[in-house]
Length: 103
Image (spheres, rainbow, N blue to C red):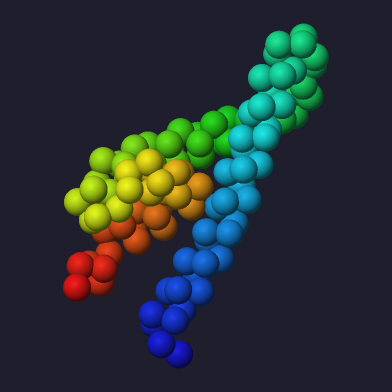
C-alpha cells in the first residue's frame, strides 16, 4: 500500500472523530453552563470529563488562532480555515503547512 493512501485514510478518520468529539464537547460545556445558570446539579462523576473537554477545546482554539494567522500566507481565508482547524485539530495545521500545496 502507498504511504500517501494510508496517510489520507488516517487523516479522514481522525477528522471525523475530532469533529464529533469537539461538537460533543461544545454540547457538554453548554449543558454545564445551563446547569450553573439554573442551579441544577451536574453529577460530580463528570468532572474529569469536563476537564478533558476543556483542555481539548482550549487546544483546538489555540490551533485555530495559529491557522487564522498563517492562512493568508497559503492563500486561504483566515476565519474559514480557523474554524476548520478548530474542529479537526492538528490535522488542519498539518494540511496548512503541507508543502505539496505550494506547487
